[in-house]
Length: 380
Image (cartoon, rainbow, N blue to C red; front, side, top):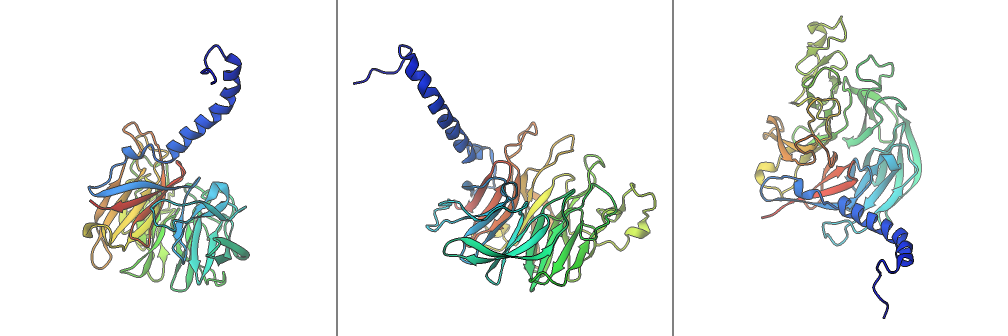
C-alpha cells in the first residue's frame, strides 16, 4: 500500500500540481458555465430556468424542421446544432453544422434549406437533418461590411427574406442606404429593396401572428444622457417606411444634433409600438404562442435586453414582456420577466441576447457573455 502524499513526498506533489491544476480550473469553469449563477435569477412563481447547453458567444437561435435547436456563434465563426433527442431538457451534444464564417448572426430555414446571414453576405445551405450538417453553400447577396454595427438578423415572411443591418455610427447620415435599415429580398437573394429605414440597429425580428407583420426591436443612439432616446419595438407594417433615425426619435422628437431638423421633418415618421428605458439594448424578440405558460403570459412579446454600456446607472440585462390585446397591439409597457443577470452594483454575470420558443412550449434564451443557452419552463 502506498503511503499518503504529504510534505514528505515533495517530488510527487510537484509532479502532480501541473497535472491537477488545469483539471481543477476546468472543473471550476465548467461548474460556472453550467449555471452556478442560476440561483441569482428571479422569475415569476411557477417558472423554472435551467442551463440547456453551452455555446460560446451564443446569439440568434432557430429550430430546424426536425426540431433541433441551432444557434449562431459570431465570435467563433460558426453555427452549431444542439440536439436533445430524448427530450431531457438538456442538449446531448454540440455539433458544428457550418464553420469558418465571418460573424454569423441571423439564421433561418426556408423550404428545407438553412440560411445564414454573416457580416457581409447571406448564404443558403443544403440541410441534412439526419447528420446535422449544412453543405453546398450558395452566395445569395452581399451585405454592408465593416464599420459600426456588424450583426445581420434574418427572417422569412410571406415568401420574402428580411435582413436587418445596423448603422455604421452613433448618429450620422449614412451613405449606404442598406444601413440602419431592414432589407427585403426574394429567397434566392434577388429583388433587394429597402423595406424599412431609420432604424439605427434593429437586431430582433419576429412576425406578430395577430397582425401578420414583421416587428423589430431597435437600439437608439447614445450620448444623449441616461434616459434618451427610448429603445423601441416597432411594427414594420405591410409596406415598411421611415422610423426616424438619425433625425428623430421616440414620439417624433427632433434630434438636436441636426440643426435643420424640425417637427415638420418628423411628422410623417412611423411611431413605435413600445418605448422602453434608454440604453437597455433590446435584442431578441419573440411572440409567445405556446400553451405551456399560464394564460397571462400567452400572447405576449418577450424581449432580451442586452444591457447598457454608457449609462451612469447600468440598466438592462434581463428579459421583459409586453402584454398584447386580441388584435396583437401592446397593452401597457414592458414588465420584468427574468432578472438577476446584473447585481445591485451593476455588475454582470450574463448578457441575454436571443429568445425563441421551442416545439414543446418552453422558451430558450441565449447569453453571449456566459456562453450559455437557458431553458425556461413552467410547472408547479
